[in-house]
Length: 282
Image (tube, rainbow, N blue to C red; front, top):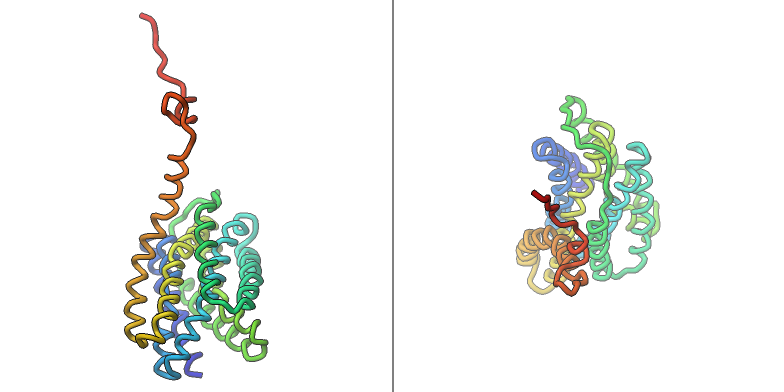
């Protein structure tokens, strides 16, 4: 019951902060906050204080699968959002993430899942679709934010209540569902348009690698150096990974551009085909 209380308390708090950031800095910034280890960071020390180091490590191991599920949701939503409504897009993206997340739970290899998550995220960022929906300013309705926070509480309680009645694999898949995104994406889609919802998922996808590296570092270090040293070192990995991910797709595109075949004159094919300046005879 204490752990459920922590989950229920964290979910609306994350919704509150993410919504305020999105209103101030834009939906991508709000999504970036959601993708950070906002849940795992306070939850793992709670597990350590209540049940010991082994439970904290097990929690972090399970959270790695959750990051892959969130990444799959973020990749699927921009491809369903422009075609479907707010709720239908969420259900479709959630179905894709849940099915593939269940398959990764069956693997039972968290380090493999972590590597797969990073590959999937990089591929998703490099192939991000162009969405026609325009970005619109967030409309500050009085009832909107309390409704989102209430929906987050209901979602967390519902998902947590289902876990004891499921098998081990299904319980793991349900535990890894992107509950915050399940609330935020349809809410933003309905209130502000598909463009803002897609930007929210892109911001989340950009920061998920930092959470993956944070969790992997903790799982590897905690049994050897203890809870607090592992936590401190893992936190240092977050900004380093964030900078690397923000530059990664750009550097890859630059490498592809510089590897274009050159003509005999030393210019690339696109540059050679450009028309030169037109000279007029005086």
